[in-house]
Image (cartoon, rainbow, N blue to C red; front, side, top):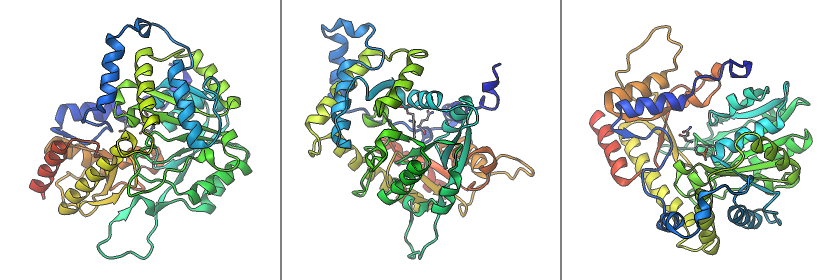
Length: 416
Ligand code: PMP
Ligand code: GLN
């Protein structure tokens, strides 16, 4: 075994996906929609496979199928307010996962530090380590301002301490990973919060790896601000997206990076020496999906307008279910996910004296086995030594059909 694999052999998804398949009847664990993708995308898929373009079954350009990089450059050019070159400012990857992997491999050397905001999408830590880097963690903390009675906590109430954040930057800092909207909390970082991060990146000449896979899933009229659009940031930011989240097709594994050529050239080097290129047909279909959305941009029948509306209702439905049984939801401003506080929720989870396993993890496993409901413990999204800092929360995915959310509600209400 190569040294770089030490300590990164366990994977929460491998474990929980298996448990959910074995025990759960209602799966609100791993984040994926159980509703179908939009019709226009399914139709494009059928057309792509049955049509005359038989070259869609063959190799395409290494760094992205031309129609896809072109439309991505057009759309993100518009969103970022700058002209993007499809060939040098955009690269297509096998999901956002590969985009992240390429970034760490391309920029992180032995001894480099990478700042990660907790709670974080779990793969950042092992990926930084595999590149030889050292992750440096900074927590979002729930702020206890003047609470209105009966008011639920929001993901916006989890915040960074500016002085603490500043203290994490040093001459060893190579990059910070930003994930807004954030998995698992659903926090959508405000412009002010992003400016704080941006100023520190500029001051310390650090890169920003900006994981924006939930960019279209933002609720209550909140604005998703792209950190690459802030002053001084374009040149030092790689923005990452995912067709899986954008079009509700997580199984397609099409992702992308957008950024300056000075950074993307190195990402291309990693890509050409590992994956080389992604499946042609799915890239073609995703390109058509984006073409359609580009033409309907901001209009009521745009999927990017409709999906968040539907998702917000699903969120509210799950909030109701959880409140009714005494789990305290942190209402997310974005994403597929909702984190709920289970500290006052009565259950029969057996006490295991001296167990290292955080309570939320034992609770989630017990709930899956005894109630058939799958969710993910929040401790999953903390590094090893911090797993017990916030160990009485679980994450539910609400990107689900009405019937699935109803089935979850039935389990919860019966259990109460
Ligand atoms: N980043 C975040 C924050 C995620 O939640 C996920 C999981 N979907 C990914 C990256 C990976 O995305 P993909 O499925 O496109 O590889
Ligand atoms: N991003 C999804 C989640 O957080 C799926 C992760 C995965 O399958 N590795 O649940």
